[in-house]
Length: 464
Ligand code: ARG
Image (cartoon, rainbow, N blue to C red; front, top):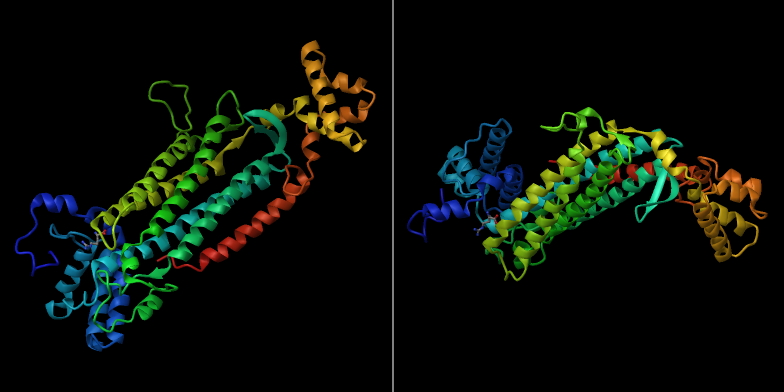
């Protein structure tokens, strides 16, 4: 069914229908469209445009249609151009022309789609944030289990200083905490109702946008009808949040790829979270980690696509805006799958603690501790840095173990040799937020508290 039987005399040419139809992707908005329509109907009832009995009939019919979606019995028809058309058609079939034809009173698909999309974003972004938190839980759990295991920390991909594995895992956890925060701030900002803006200018009917906004759990209504129907900032923000989250997941993925190589050998992936090779019998591949890395490209692409679509668009609604949907929907699907799969990887991966610790135990990894010991004895840091640096060079050039040079040095000696013992250096990091056992124990508590706070924030939002 088309919605414009009056002005346009003929049906759409096939090529036009094929090109403009959005049902194949906007059908995921069914739930939100029904929720929006319920509020709209109640709004029309409140201001007396619909009688009480009409309101009841329409609400019952919307429930009926909802049931058809819930049970998978809703049947789309070839003429259904988009989800709005499909639902209005079905409501009219059930409720009859007389009442069904009143559903769209005072409403345009322009404010309708803006409303649907905000409702969809609200519940979907809350869902993504929940998945991020589940991954954070897995990281926190593994951090707890890692106890005093340590590995090299790197700068420039060169071994720099040993750090606790728990510290390393929580570094990712905190990046994800910013993602959760960003998603929830985006949800909070987008929580404004465009319903009542109509096609672009509002209506001559006595609509009550404040009422429908409250019905839908929005903070309030639009301030400007033109802005209401043309604003897709929230889509861009959602896509940015997801793209950056995707970038974080790509860094996790890259790390797992590296760590699972024979060269690093820091971890062994569980068989259920690894893949084989179709040709090489010996291969065990980290495909989940690679795809987590690869999806970031697609997610950044989606953000770009929508920004470029919006650039230079005149007020108010333009059909170009339909192009916001596929990138948005796909971004949520892809990032959700990545989050779930990566969580599984972290829950099941085996850390090769031996390998990690051996890599971190090179005596030079404690060079800074030697310099800091001299500083505590009163030597200016620059001087201490040069002295220890010279010893490391000496040790390499003359093939004398650093320990021997340290032991023989008048200002260092036996006390300094102890610093070079395996596992000692990492225990000396005591800066709050640093990589040693004291600060990391404190950090784990702070991280757990942060998760609690975010869980409470998350629970404030409806998921349906
Ligand atoms: N499918 C459209 C979209 O996604 C719905 C709004 C259509 N409005 C219109 N005036 N054709 O933007």
